[in-house]
Length: 376
Image (cartoon, rainbow, N blue to C red; front, side):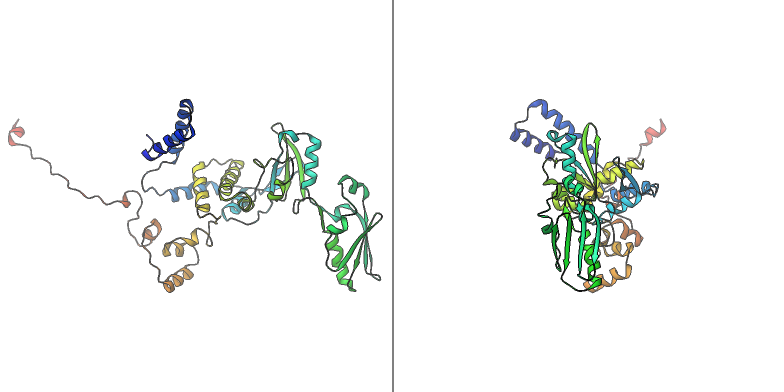
């Protein structure tokens, strides 16, 4: 099958404007033809129904094994059916947000990689404290600091009090102790203050609680538990062209809707492959396109694609039937019965396949054979 004339014209214009050599032109034409053939389907084929069947049937075979260990230290990552639900329900936050941080070639030294990992991992006050003492008479808290860890993590003691932001307390460092003086004479408050001090962020990226450095395909890679793509991109030595996260909304915020679409495809395909299920990538691509076609990530559900369809009957057939019928009657909506579901509900021929066309024409009568021919 040849390419459509429009695509051929666009290819020729591209070749001329970019001055592509003849040898390269043939390779590009071959690749475009291959992609075009993968996207061809029969006219009026119900590809949405085929996609739904092709994805949901293998999903019933998925196990409820929800965790996979990433890296040598064993970071648990949600997979299986719970992960598929997270992706297609467009959850704002995955249950186990993780990042795979790739390092630039010039920083592929274990010591340099460790320093980058130290910049990524979040450090709280409780990570550098040996013990705490509460004085309930004078209303102050004393935290004995682990000076060895302070030195290892390269934390400046002079700037440490400024990093601990507390509204109702004054923070200072005296020797190897962190002193917190409460401004309120309340025993209940000072216990809450102790928790607030220990949970205060002093270094690294917020939310990244664990980092694992491992070697994959001959290069050092950092796997994290917790995600903040924007902050990681700012660290020197990180390769922003390959670094990724399993938080699709974070990718959307930082890199845009096209990157989010690719993330949906890659995450869904990876989850399926990890379970040993073979699903054609075109079905996943179609679903990802549907979720991101409006420039935003929409869920497959009552508050997303299924709940926003034009047909009243289709919306009512999915969930919240009474709500949709009442809302449609108040707004005076009209259903043009252009889809398959609404026509099946009304016992009409669905506009799918040959049901989408009306054949108009004159069927010529067969010529009567002459008597002479019959005699012969």
